[in-house]
Image 1 (cartoon, rainbow over the protein chains, first blue to last red):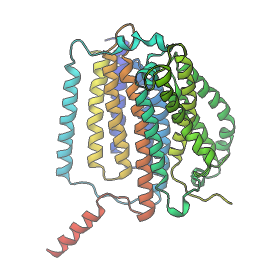
Image 2 (cartoon, rainbow over the protein chains, first blue to last red; image 1 turned 30 degrees about the vertical axis):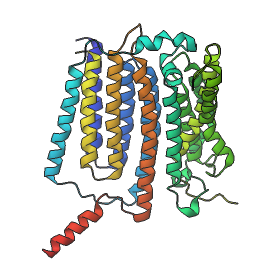
Image 3 (cartoon, chains in turn blue, brown; image 1 turned 90 degrees about the horizontal axis):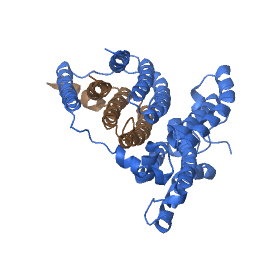
Image 4 (cartoon, chains in turn orange, brown; image 1 turned 180 degrees about the horizontal axis):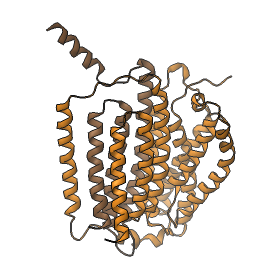
Length: 313
Length: 113
């Protein structure tokens, strides 16, 4: 047994036991913290599977920002904890048997892979030169499957509209109040003042390098989102009211630019979301920069939740 | 057994665990966490497919990886909406338990008989 395999086995055992622990533990806050650790371990698993782009996304979104969102919710729900009636033993056993069957089925699929394994890697590489990108994952996201990426941005925006519409009528047009539930904390304020400049530089780098190395608009945008959340939570800068026209432009700027360039593809390259070969990389980088900013704003506001206070007039 | 198979079995276990949590845990917030556990397992399965599709000098097939990146962002958006719904429900009724009405109804009927 090689050292790498031993490491993988240990990692798998840790991941599965974190999953189990998360389901078993009574305290919601502990469960969320276990979930964050689980997400970070998952990011290591992605590195072991040679998918560094996904590892970055998982660490930033799957673990980091989701963890913050659910932790905030767990803290708020704590004040009124109710004794939940658990399902009957018979139902639990039936559910366990059913889930074990699903797991066994998936395991069988994993253990009996098709030969040769299906792969689109040669196709993805064949035309990568024309896009001028060096990162094949970015190539898939912004050239071959650009429509998926565009629609995903729309889905995220729709989710934000969904979250906002949960505000009570009297608070419509108000601002999310992330800092309202935080006790004053000097250390938090200190970090909220010191970290954002570094975070922004890092986000710019991630977005820029995504064209040729692991990274990209998603990961860069998430770093921006986290920095903004930190500032809002510490109360250094309050969240903007959701009716703010500038904010709304910021949210739609990325998808709108993507759409404009997509339609321009009809005239420049003969198809929707196609890029003229000579300027493909330049256009993709422009779209990525605009998307990173919009993703950052959208993810941060999704995590900030619906408006909870009216701005003072 | 290689790395891909090992993580494939891990993903199968995670899907089962997540599904079990969604079915059995009565608290909405824990259901959301279990949903994310399940989602991570499904994404990991994509990673295994990507790793096995390593060809043409690449360490992994980029197409499933791109799908997973999109998936993670959409899963976060869905989680944010779910959490907002639970918090709103909680602030309205101070009771987020699913099926509370059904249980109390059953108890009431039990009293009659």
